[in-house]
Image (cartoon, rainbow, N blue to C red; front, top):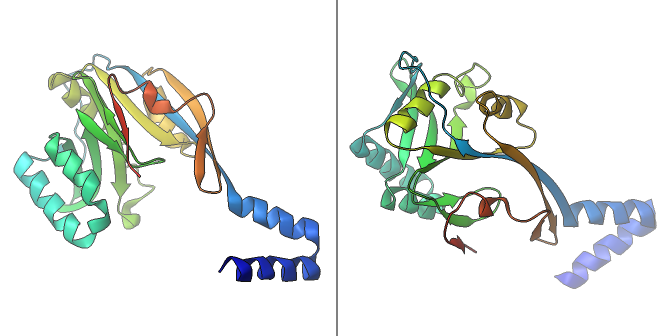
Length: 217
């Protein structure tokens, strides 16, 4: 297999030039990703906030949804197992009775599925928002932000005092919504060389977890 791959690159180099092909090899071997992370105290929020189209599912509703998802996406089994074992919260967006979006909020052990496969142990007062998803037909309509402050107030009412989340670098809208609440933030960069990740200035979840980190491979 390696011999055939080498022959392919040698053939391309002869046809297109060594420098051009070397650039392609480098782009394939090296990836650069930027992320923005938030971690700070939940602010006081007014009681009159509208929930928008979002609501917090009951444990029974959450468990039923996870059961259906595991049949369609067995590759996500570990993430959902961790979510149920640690009683994570599942917020869902509904339009005309149909579920069109979701947002998980973790507590206890939390599975960070992106960008690396890591489990983080959160302090009891810390909530970590992850796995935001909006159905494709309903994107760019403000649904992700609809009820955002209501969800933050719900977390405070449940006893959480700190909030954390990560946003991919290109998601300026998502970053803006969290920054408007005054959460401390920092940027991080991950370089992946030949499949091995290297974080500049350290791995970001070291600031979020309070006790133990357990990597999944």
